[in-house]
Amino acid sequence: MKGIGLVPNWQKKNTAQVVNKIRHFFQQRDLVLLIAGSEQDHCLAETALAEELKSWPDQVELIIVVGGDGTILRAARELAHWNIPLLGINVGHTGFLAEIEVDQIDRYLQLLVAGQYILRERMMLQAVVRRESLELSRYLALNDIIVSRGPFSRIIKLDAYINKEFLESYSGDGLIVSSPTGSTGYSLSAGGPVVNPYMELLVITPICPHSFYNRSIIVNGAECIQLKVGSGQTQVVLTADGQVGFALEKDDIVDVCRAEQKIRLVHFADSSFYRLLHQKLKG
Image (cartoon, rainbow, N blue to C red; front, side, top):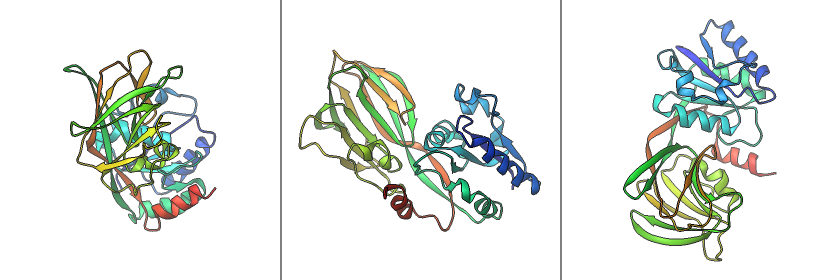
């Protein structure tokens, strides 16, 4: 194999132990392993991964991410343009993105070096923020784009359009536009449907709507959703994957569409989304 990259979340409790186990595994097989950061150095939490690891694209053929779903979301969002597959190892709590739990590492790494795995693509989201005719910012997300009220704000109003055709005015705490992957995240907590992560669609889910008839809406993945801020006396924020954000103003428009980039995740023959769903949600 070409080199393997390892992106650990050093702030997780068991990360150092897991990293040492992975390092030992690859050393025994004389395979190159590049490790981002160190247990003593938390700079990865403060700098862009693509900048910190800019030499990796020519050296690695896949990247192992050690952490929880949040770590994998960050790696997917910041490294998507590299088109390098990701393999998640979960040292967090309930996670839907990691393929391997800590107690399964040896078995699945053996399958990995033997080439007994497949790569499967998942769609990502792109959000563009516009104020009048000016583009202010754009964001990439694997899970969701959320427009919501700030921590001390009252309810907000958002006008939603699909392909510039008016859909509905929503009053409440905000709206979630979720990818299929993100359907098991905040969207699910807000009452949205669970969607197979390999489908191509968008889910619109209101957050605490001030109406009894507002429910989630599923739209084709090729369509574009526009959210217009109707609130002027309260704080409104956009967040991508719950990790990066932007303060919005009245009449700002957020366009959310399927991104050109897709993320490729490593999967093994015995992995199943529906079995994982049962395991994660049964408690």
